[in-house]
Length: 263
Image 1 (cartoon, one colour):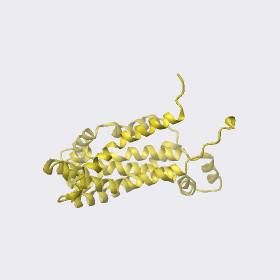
Image 2: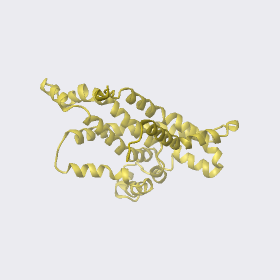
Image 3: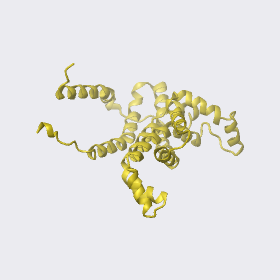
Image 4: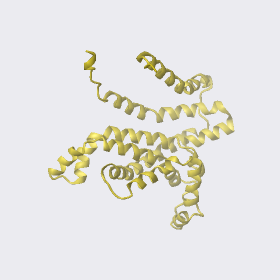
């Protein structure tokens, strides 16, 4: 089979990109611009999603980064099992994951009952909302953060240790500066994943309503046209961060070497 010429591969790539972006064009053409207004509760849903997603990301980064570092730098018995278990929440259907979390953390679950005894309810509350987002987004961050840390040369870290730095100092002075772009990209993916999570949040924390659940409520109560304004808000708050990091990663990509044989 003959190789595809470069210009044909470019055409195919652009065609595939256009296919993926077709839903966005539908949003532009079908938005009722003459009657563009938010429904009641949309601003509150936006505030809920932004505040609680930010809290969830702090938790994900604080606990996910050490796990990513261990998986990237340590070799231990059972490591493959840990990596496999990490993917279980990622591979579980969102509605199923929400049911499992509610079974565990709900008022009749053994862990939920224990928290209820402490006065903390983990269904239909702000903590439940954050917990659902953490479960939905943490695997994405850990997988991306692990790849970013693995991209840092261990020899550079070893050099820092030979200078007397502690493991934390090596991570702060060597690993973090060299992997920050990959870590930030992993965080942006986790951010969008948590911000747009519907299935887990729907089952575990219908209240307080964030953007995805409010989109569903608007669709059920007022019809399709009422969804578009809030959907535009979701894109405006959810897309800039990953798009910016993607642009930074593209600009910092290694430059291809010229084909010496073709000179």
